[in-house]
Length: 125
Image 1: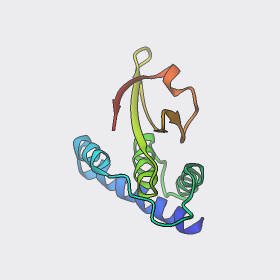
Image 2: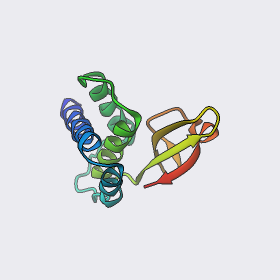
Image 3: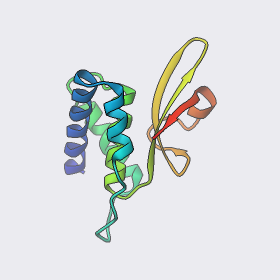
């Protein structure tokens, strides 16, 4: 678990850098181009274990982690371990709010399960 948490922390740092010094299109391209890695070993962590590693990394990150940063890191980590994850970006009109989360097979894995009831989906990648 410690290795996964460290890998997750480094992904958070990477996407923090991308969000600070590049634009949203670059972040979007990274997520869209991240391929699902084939499972090579018999024992791969479940998406719940991988999401828990991201949660641990968020706790030990040196500043507040934004939902877009967390969702991008979660999507990449899940895809690296063979999960067909999608980062979803949604918005609500009144009051205006936007949010990002991750789904695997249409189920929210890194947030509350009722995100689709609150936010209108703007993008899936």
